[in-house]
Length: 158
Image: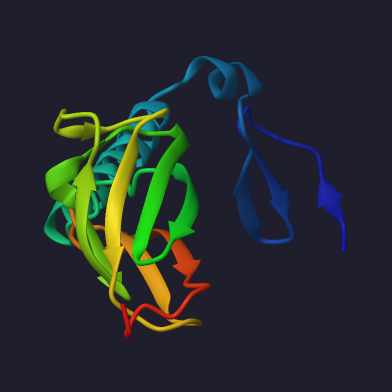
């Protein structure tokens, strides 16, 4: 294979084939292809972002979520009476709290409608020794147990 040097500017011959050469000055000054490529990339990126946002709303991922309150409770039993003390954490509306399992009614002693740190509440235990009293938060989409207590005395004979 014999390469013949360019006879004319912009091309050279390889055998009987004429092969055009690239003008380096033209390569660095011509920018026609930059705008369409960047435009296509931007359009694809915008489409992907819009699809993600619309998908999140359609699937309900951007909806409201209600977190379960975090509380620390202590329990003290005296016969059929169980005293529940709020030791710390989030405040909870009384209407969103129930006693379940071995418990009957949940009544705050502070006279307020909010169960907050330092407050106590009374629950009448109606189970036997070993039964579990659950303090349940009912203010969200699903009920959540805030605290549990295993009864230590039998209350069915009382």
